[in-house]
Amino acid sequence: MNYRMIVLKLGICSISWSFLLVSCKSTPEKTLPLKYIVEIKAMKFQPAELIVKSGDTVVWVNRDIVEHDVTEEPGKAWTSSAMPAGASWSLVVAKSADYYCSIHVVMKGKIVVKDAKVGGDYLSQALF
Ligand SMILES: [Cu+2]
Image (cartoon, rainbow, N blue to C red; front, side, top):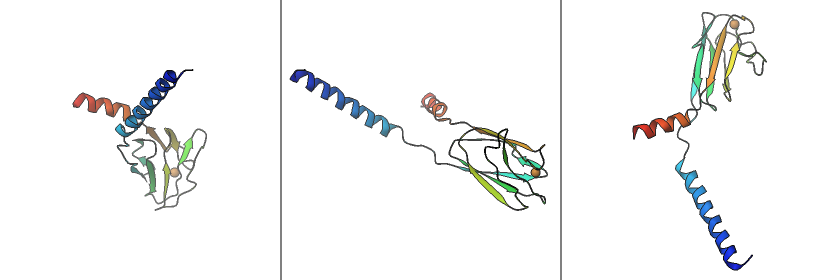
């Protein structure tokens, strides 16, 4: 390898690095994690379906007079355990999930994770 090759390679390397740094700066995190409330009342999860982004927090609040729980379906990957009246339980959501109340199995809910960064960027590009 001669001197010119080394200079050329170093040059390409530093150009790539500056490109990487610029790319990092140009895509800042635009949204902070949000917190959503799902009320449990009249033997239902309300809203029964919630659309969030990964990293958002969902808080279930039991507004009924009987105990309920919040359990991932079908694998019971997570559960709140029994929540007495007035209790609440929260989960930082990583991915979409169906859930139910294992005490009253007809009570069902769903969390849909939609990380809309790509869609959002398309939208802003289309608008501006
Ligand atoms: Cu229940």
